[in-house]
Image 1 (tube, rainbow, N blue to C red):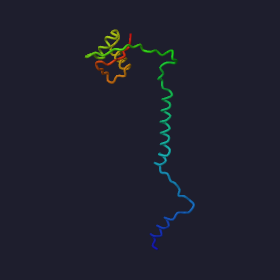
Image 2: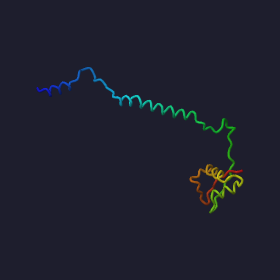
Image 3: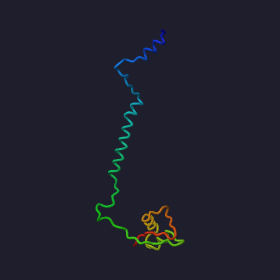
Length: 122
């Protein structure tokens, strides 16, 4: 048996009963420790933002008010700007348009003739 064959057979045979020792590299330690820490920090920040959010409409149901509205039918050639001017000429039309878009869940502020819209009542 040559020296190279003896070296191969001696390294291939492991000691019975003892598993090989696990060695972690520097990168392995960073992944093993750092990844769970980053995930934990993300969860904590998410929960902190959720629990401290100031999105509260009112302290009680008595503080809530319903916006009075009327229904208007869009005429041919009429725009939201014209409707806002008719509905409440004393207010800034941009504010009235914003209210109309929000009340009717309009996309891009486009209206079609014959469409029914809810507009804020004075």
